[in-house]
Length: 262
View 1 (cartoon, helix red, strand yellow):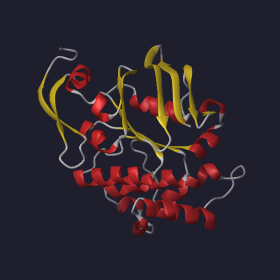
View 2 (cartoon, one colour; view 1 turned 120 degrees about the vertical axis):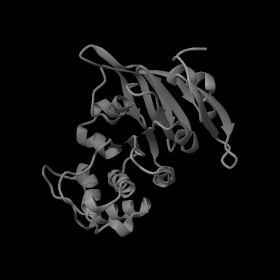
View 3 (cartoon, rainbow, N blue to C red; view 1 turned 60 degrees about the vertical axis):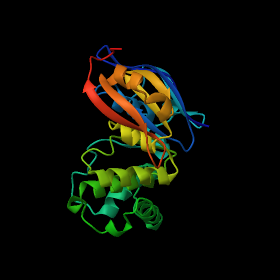
View 4 (cartoon, one colour; view 1 turned 60 degrees about the horizontal axis):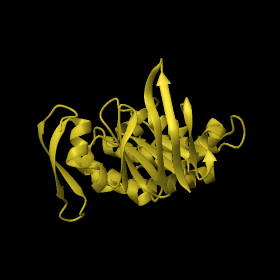
């Protein structure tokens, strides 16, 4: 059981954005989705979430094809936190988290926000260490606090799969480390699109590395984050050290090279 991506391809106006992508992700794992700008990371997350439909291939979660589900059914199983997913109206933090309960409405235009939904929302805030923010106005929060609340909103969907698109953008170092530590502590299968290779090495069980919409490397951080692979995909020289506490790889960058050079 887990997530299986089989031969996914997706094009926009004839341009392939994702090309024949296949991978298997175990239940409970945290996967880092890496690649240069334009590699197809955000598009792949939307395909996995069932928001965009692949031109070819399938996504299955615990043996169920996401393509066979309605949008609401998919949202009950999968939560996607996209970039810049902030509410445009003035809401309290608790109201923002309660938006995650919308997929669980039991009838057309049914209400939400009852006692059961509030319990789920408060539990989600507690899970990300933000319960004390429940009554605060969303617009008064710092960037790190807003990201934690957005993850709580996603968790209020009670998903089996959590997808995060650049969750550490615009956060300081302390907030980045706290946020990714909280994602790991949730115990939910997660896929995170990240730019920072060192964060991926520290917090992900496995890495999927994209380039030009193709999967070019997959495996543990030690297997994927090598000088040869990083140089070929990102066009930079680097050295790999071992973290003195965690033992995971630490990438130390050197000078730029021509992409694909030996």
